Length: 293
Ligand SMILES: C[S@@+](CC[C@H](N)C(=O)[O-])C[C@H]1O[C@@H](n2cnc3c(N)ncnc32)[C@H](O)[C@@H]1O
Image (cartoon, rainbow, N blue to C red; front, side):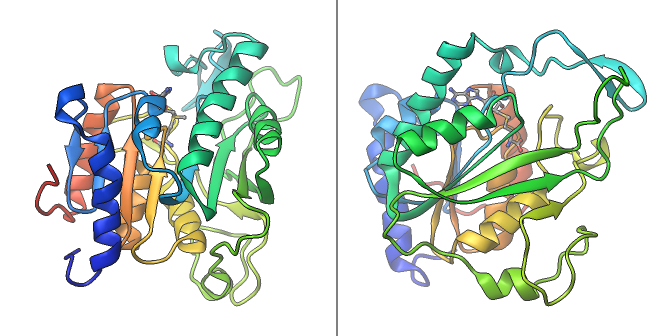
């Protein structure tokens, strides 16, 4: 995107970044382009440096805290559920403190009319919902993301997990948030066998989880489908908006921001391997222009 087409948002994006990128403190992006930047840092470190009330929309897919040495079924075989050290629970109280810290930091940088989406399973989503309410967010919806291709349950002693919840909340109850109603009602969603054409978008979305074939730039164990993020971004942002993902992972939010077009993306990710994966993914989208720094 050229600044002359979107002069104000371009300036705002650079303004957000100029507070973060400070050579004296050695914070530099892992990867940056004119409309996307990824930091290989803890999200709290980067959020602390961002100007308040500067971000239009946040999508956050925090650790699920479900890596407890249990087993799941992957490609028809028994496999450990463990995703990585970052996904281990530190106990109820510590997990609550973790979610409180990042959600509070997100609240500060979000514009009053801005919205936040948080995804998770029952391992984490109730804690996040509680913290959102404690911090005076106004919940707009809880979306059920149904996965028609979910893995089987091995134990056959309870139901097969086949959905995640995505909470959508507004910072300020009185502010007017973005909801592109017509685009949701009349858009094309061929991946969704539940959505009927030209009817209101409901709160249950059927979107297949990405298969290995959809991970051509490397594997992230909890990568979200591009269609899920594209829907979220199309529904709740406009051209020129700045989108933040504090738990960038494999960069799905960045990829969806660039695919939606004319949006700006800031991602933070503690694992350098996933930053590399994101870089390759975003480069492939051919939206790369001149570096910011
Ligand atoms: C659930 S995954 C996100 C997956 C992502 N939505 C995608 O589609 O690929 C969470 C990610 O957050 C990262 N992470 C965990 N704690 C973090 C922190 N404090 N700051 C930044 N990233 C963190 C992990 O390394 C992991 O890649």
